Image (cartoon, rainbow, N blue to C red; front, side, top):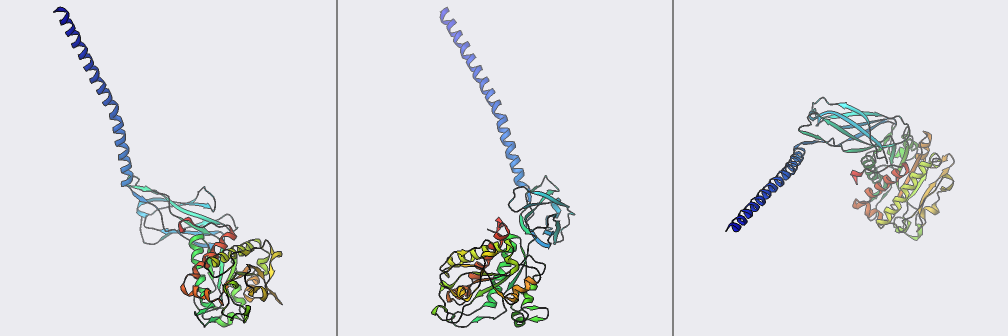
Length: 403
């Protein structure tokens, strides 16, 4: 009995010890877990606070080219009540690093207008930039600042001449077409794409069916005073005259306005000023290459290649024989006459020291081309090709948000 009693007492002591140890372990484990739960809860609360904050992000930026060394950036004033300061950020095309180039203090007043800031450039060369506007919020407890939307801008200035005027060079048979109408369509799309996608500013010799310069209109500016169109480019960096092509009567054994798609090719005719400038030649190469590919993909040409040139020495003299030839690649040409450049528009541009080119996009004597133009697809496709070629020639990038 004594031995059994001792054993029972010993067993009880052991059980009590195990119970105390287990209870202690549970208390320790609970104590170790509570900080983690509190930490998770704190992080969730912080995330929720960020979510609950109203985001302030400057959007809808636009720009204006004031001069070669001044670019104006604009944005709506609707964020004024929430902003302490705006910071204007800039980077060159192709660079990763942003640089703050200016700041503006908010007056916290909304007037439903635009805020404007002018960037004075230190470089005079043609450049493409990307801008954004960041902010410091007035009340960080309730508002969260985010990087602003970006906009492309450049100091490049183009002069675009939609060839001829309303109704000029009309084709009556089959699908109705007039070169003077279609070149205006291309120019409208081209100006829009250049500005929105590349930050390029362009002026036009006309933005309606009619053209009027220095007291002359329409027909006068298509013959005797045509050089005024080129001279309108004074002070710009490049003159581009938009056209569609034609051929001699009965060319290739077909009706004059019933030519096969194999005649279709882009031809770019440069003035003597452009023939001596590498950048103008590269622009012509870029435009021609993209037009050739676009027409081929659209099924209105049989050749997708374009014969690029490296310098002025490789630029061929334009001829009727080459113009009307089928199944050959387009290329860059020059055409000279008794007074230098044969075409008055190109002479006009040269008169004011501006490199210029005529862009013969394709042949309106091809029925399939006229049909595609009437369907509304061709103007935008050719305008896009023009814009991409111009951008390539100047080394510009496309704004990612427009893709």
